[in-house]
Image (tube, rainbow, N blue to C red; front, side, top):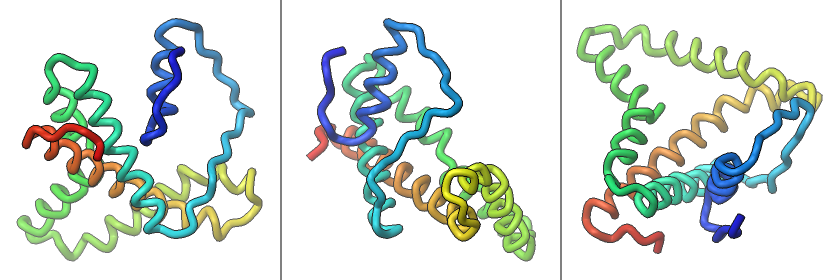
Length: 158
């Protein structure tokens, strides 16, 4: 399939190229193990790099390079949440913010409860939402960073 350069999200790029030419089969029992990141900071910077690479790939492939950038910003969980918080504060609903955060956290615990089956530890399940938020923040910050570099004419990954 032509290989890839290890820069972040290259596995997604490779998967897209494979799916474009071959049939993809779903295997529900498949497990993928990644090298553990030792801290939330390491998780953030790993996903920052992935976000930058996603925008870089989009800009290198698409003729209208800002269409996908706009899409990435519009689908940003971080941006949506920030807009919701701002709206709640403007409307005087800021007292409900802790309730909203608690419900979101519990929804993420419920969503990732399957990880207990693999790890057998509930403490991991309860910390997973925090890791997911850090991942989303890192990804979005990388997208914004690379998007800014595109806007100022420096779209390389350096």
